[in-house]
View (cartoon, rainbow, N blue to C red):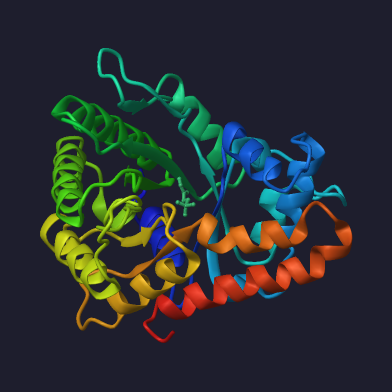
Amino acid sequence: MDKNILIETAQKMMLKPKGILAMDESSPTIAKRLASINVENNENNRRRYRELIVTTPELSTCISGAILFEETFDQKMSDGTLFREYLNSIGILPGIKVDKGAKDFSCHPGEKVTEGLDGLGDRLSDYYAKGAKFCKWRAVITIGDNIPSDACIESNMNALARYASLCQENNLVPIVEPEVLINGAHSIETCNEVTRRSLKSLFNNLDMLNVYLPGTVLKPSMVISGQENQSRADRNTVASMTLECLQDCVPELTAGIAFLSGGQTDEEAETHLNIINNQANLPWRVTFSYARAIQAAALASWGGNDENIKKSQEILFDRASKCSMASVGSL
Ligand code: 13P
């Protein structure tokens, strides 16, 4: 592990006024996205869509790094350039999602545990040799009747820490993503309690495994009411409870924080980030690592039709620049 490499990469990822573009939808998720616009889910269409995203003019003014799915990381664009090399050439760091997905957690109905540690060290050294600079691993915590269990939180956070340690051994900055799902009718207070439990466990596990925090980026969900809650907390409450939770649970040494959008509307995702960045003296850089809140409108506008590429890229750029402005509180 070379701490200087990790710090240099993490600082580039967190450069103002940029954020991280998540475009690493797994096979089942990209299948859903393409189905939503009636486009067949095949390798060529996945390439066409992702090529539209990365060739958006001026994208690198708002985006510091892009998280790719394994397929895209090794895929060529229509002119034969590898996606990862193209990104590098336009000043966007290529990253890769390395977990193998959230699977049903044995003997814990309704809960998930993320898999992918077997053989991970060898995979990571290969990704680094091919030019990856950072990685992502997503853990999923579900709120419901009597869940999450401590077993679910602890198992997921320990796996995140083991992944992070393997990344750093290979000079890759780990993005650690403990996502508390927005699905359900729970209150913001319940989300707050679960997010705190998850983050405390995560940083305990990172500490236990000697993970180097200045070379680690946290990708959390916000503290927010469940989507089906009848009296959802307002924007200022979401921003202030999220910030308080992070201040209580995230060590200042952490390289930075980049939120997921997690089913928030585009407007919510950017407004919450903007309010948070209007608070004085944040101990870490706080930015975005959105997938849906950057891509959704552009995907719908494209609809699989090449004639719509330019319009769709304009929409994508507009979304990315709003998030970029929110990341410095100037929306
Ligand atoms: P969303 O912004 O759509 O939640 O996606 C972020 C992500 O990378 C989930 O793993």
